[in-house]
Length: 118
Image 1 (cartoon, rainbow, N blue to C red):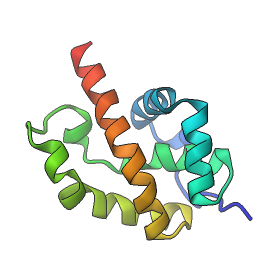
Image 2: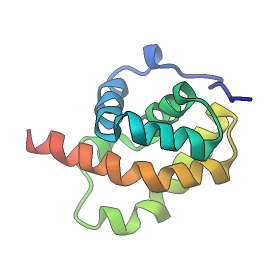
Image 3: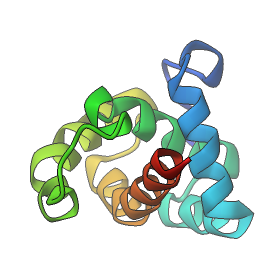
Image 4: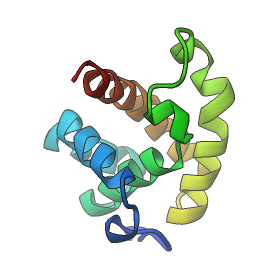
């Protein structure tokens, strides 16, 4: 049975929604379906996981304020709190969300880099 997000929805996410939509576009339907299979949930819940993950990232990271070693420290400094936040908001296990982050964080960073380049 699919797990439904318990809190924040697309409509309540403000500017995070813009980044979230860009990340969803970057992922494409096939990778979102893959994420849904990995999470053992439906596509809409997988989309919410993506949007909540973007929303849970520190604002300075989305704004491009982080320096050059971001990818090397991302899992150590950012992924654990993001993982806990997304798991709490979706009802998915932290382990499942952690696996999703392995797919999502590189795509999110690519999307942020593209936005910074204009």
